[in-house]
Length: 121
Image (tube, rainbow, N blue to C red):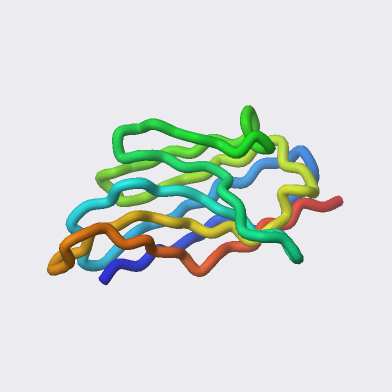
């Protein structure tokens, strides 16, 4: 089956930037939607940004104008460019993708292992 591997998290000062990457691998026939979620301590997981295979994007209001999601369909990779980071952006960021695997009739949702982003001075 498929798996998602994230990278790019870390510590950054307020106002700084980070770029997250998430690469899909395995027995993949096609990928539909891809997106990023985050979960801060004591809070529910929330959608940050999503991108369809056709290039349409959607963002949480809290990150509009600061974060940009993009995809490289040939590389089966989704990125999240985060600029103007704030302490409230501190969370574990998870990649999500709807993947159709060889031998399976439909799309299943897959999650990455998560990458920690810490914004503090």
